[in-house]
Amino acid sequence: MKKILITVLLFAAVQIVSFAQKEQKLFNGKNLDGWVIYGTEKWYVEDGLLVSESGPDKGYGYLGTEKNFDDFEITLEFKQEANGNSGVFIRSTVDGTKVSGWQVEVAPPGSDTGGIYESYGRGWLIKPDPEKDSALKFGDWNKMRIVVKGDNVTSYLNGVEMVNFSDEKIGEGKGGVLLQIHDGGGIKVYWRNIVLKEL
Image (cartoon, rainbow, N blue to C red; front, side):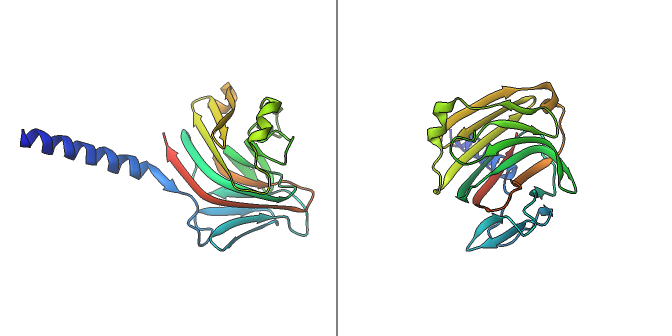
């Protein structure tokens, strides 16, 4: 009996370690290690938070992971100031400030946070039902979860499923995770607790 119990405990420990190894913090709260800045907009760390802010050029800006990720689940928290127009890109690449890929929208109230937009392509692929917009807490911390598996993307905002969308082109996509600053100026968004688990 004791041998069986030890075997079971060892198996459980291996499973826990294996699970923990797959989960990784993308932002360490200290600096931008593991990330690449695209464009001239501002990305910096302040009081343990990642801050994205419009620069003098008022253009598009991106902060992308050095690594590419295929199937994954990412959770993060964001807080918007000013107009807060941003987004989380999946399986995306950048050339200068031209991004190729898919954005899960982060935007002010009434602007489809959680929807999926294809940049320099088909545009909006799916928007959340309008009544789900009440899940967004503008000016306060919000938790977003995005699950990307095969050709399917599901987004959640503060525990509410915003969209569940399958698309062959997304299924073929390759690239990293990127955070965005929209063009136009006057944007400031704070980020924290960015954790990714490969599936």
